[in-house]
Length: 52
Image 1: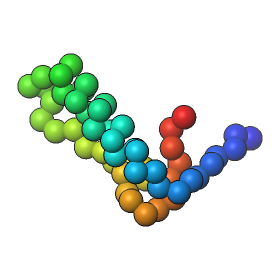
Image 2: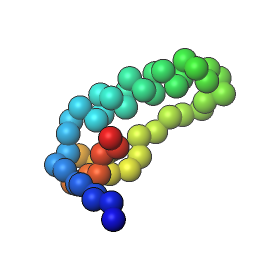
Image 3: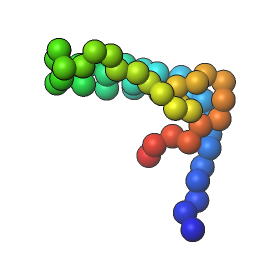
Image 4: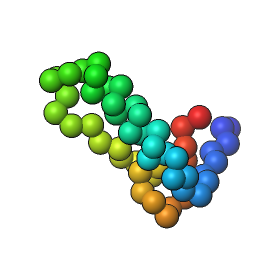
């Protein structure tokens, strides 16, 4: 069985999203209308299961 770890919110997740969103926007150009940060790592103040 796989172990799942949840951790306190990390403010750096928002910064990491912004960097990735910029890369995606550059790659997709006008094909991307919007890029959203969703999931538990997007919500400040809650525990989250970060991707590793």
